[in-house]
Length: 233
Image 1: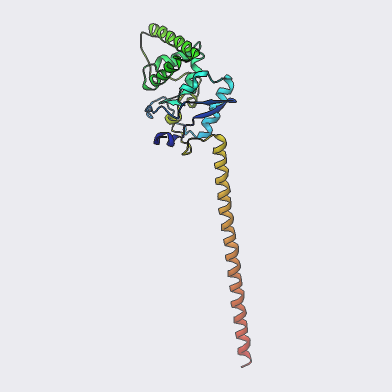
Image 2: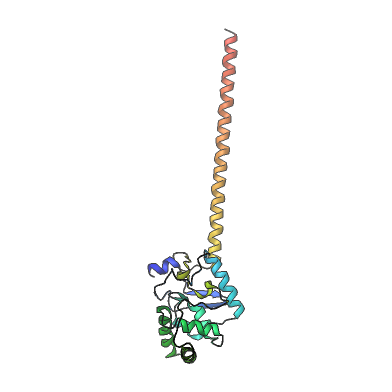
């Protein structure tokens, strides 16, 4: 696992909408552009938030993993593989077709297309999906005269669904096996540690206070004894 994968913790398995998706590897290694306008600047993404948003999206779609998902990686540069696969199954939606058309020649999309073409060699379903996609893109090329917007984002789809963890800057645990439950467990562990640390400090105050009180009482007692002794001299 390379440094980039460890940094962003892209898992080989993800679970959304009651479905578990298993990929070929952890990352495709395509570079990302964090300065692009596709990434909102007014939002700080956390892993749990992104997980929740994606889970809601795919639960609503009732999306089932296609047979050829095992030929892919979880992400390709800027884009989440799962979004591309779900969009591929619904090219009738104009926004999905426009997404593929506008990003057709970007490094992210070209890397994904390469793996999909490999899948098509042995998976008939993948082969048919790719043929449908190429036909739809060719149609849009004629309609749009080949003009493309490489910052295009599908209308009504949250950026946390479309974009990859790496593009969003969502960091995960070092071993890349994180999920929402693990993150919650880590949060609970931190709270327990903080609570334990606070309890230790309280005990320190109590013990220290007790020692101080004992010293003060003993000092006063000795002072009184000294005074009493002096009165009989």
